[in-house]
Each structure stands twice: as structure tokens, then as C-alpha cells.
Image (cartoon, rainbow, N blue to C red; front, side):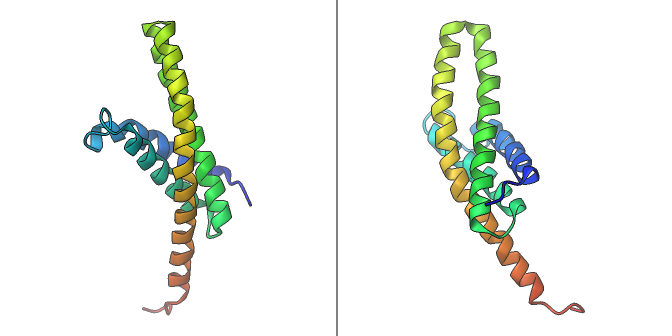
Length: 134
């Protein structure tokens, strides 16, 4: 298994962007079903990291899991710092929930990473099967 920095960085960026937009873009995920937003964030970030990592499923799963966990950690740190402005008790609550969020986001990231690497391998096979002139 090979950890690729470029794939992890792309996955982190995708995780952060989708993580901040999921509450606004996906209806009802911010209040009623927050786990849907976490799962969606992890899967999309994992797919991006897995696709960039290559066509081996193990590499895609590793890069997807690391990217979504790292993206969730960055979001956790930002939210904890913002929570400190409200006081130490809300910051502790945000941090405790955030640790759970990192674990919850990493599992769909692994699945998404494996799926992204499968898609990458599939597109490679399709591209090599075509004649060059058509």
C-alpha cells in the first residue's frame, strides 16, 4: 500500500469543502440527520483521494481514509477554536463530538477511496481499449 501526498491533499480539500457545504447543500443534514453529512463528506473525499491515488484498491482505501480523517481533523480544530470564543464548555463539547466525527468520517472515506480507485482503473482500461484515431 502506497500513501500518495497529492491524493491525500486533494482528498483533504474535497473533504473540507464538502464538509462545510453539506449542511447548506444537502437538505436537513445540519439538524436532523448530521450523520448523512458526515457520510457524504467521507465518501466524496474518499472518492477524490482514491481516484487520484490510482487503480489499486488498497492504495485508494488507505489514501481515502487518511484524507477524510485529516480533513475532519482540520475542520475539528477550526470549530474548536471558534467554540473557544463562546467559552471553554462549548469548546470541550465541540471537541468531544469532533473526535467521534473523525472516526465516523474515516470509515466512509475508506469505502469511497476503494470505489475511487476502482473508477480510476475502470477508466484506464476503457482508455486503453480504444483505437488512437477515433
